[in-house]
Length: 163
Image 1 (cartoon, one colour):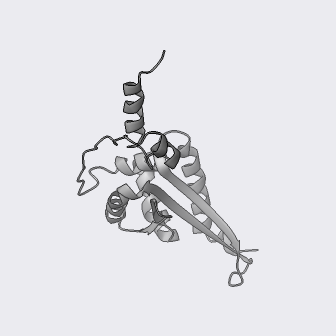
Image 2 (cartoon, one colour):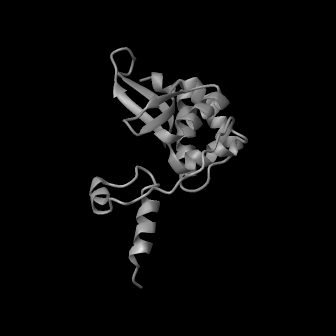
Image 3 (cartoon, one colour):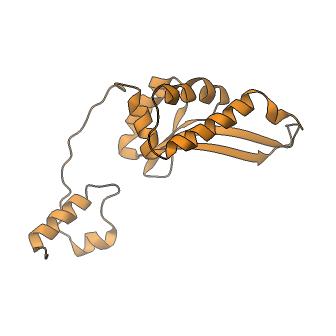
C-alpha cells in the first residue's frame, strides 16, 4: 500500500494535533501542515467518580517514597503519594479532580504537563483509597493499587515507627 501526497499530509495534520504536536524536523519537512481543529470541551465538574478511576488507569501513579530522615526513630520517612499527570491542555480537568475529591493540589510538571498530587497520608488513606475501593481500577494498575493499600494499612497501624 502506498500513500498519496495528500494522504500523507492528512496524517501529518493529525499528528500535529496529538500530544505535543510535530517535531521541529517534521515542521521543516512539511511546512504546509495544518493541525486538525479539536472542539473545546468545557467540563465544569467530574460527572461520576468512575472518571477518576479511568484517569488513574491511563495516566495515574501510586507512589511510595522512602528516604533518610533525622527526625524519625528508624531514620527513614515513608510517604505515600497518588499522582495524575496530564498535558497542560488538561490542567483544568486536574483542577476539577482536586475540587471533586477535596484534597491534593495541582502542580506544574515541566513546561507541558501538570500533576494532581495527593501527598498527605490521611487524604490517601481516607479519600483516595476509598474512591478506588468503591470505583475499581481496571487492568494491571489494580495490583499497584492493592500494594498501595497494603502499605497504607501497615503505616496506618504505626508499624513503620518501631524498630
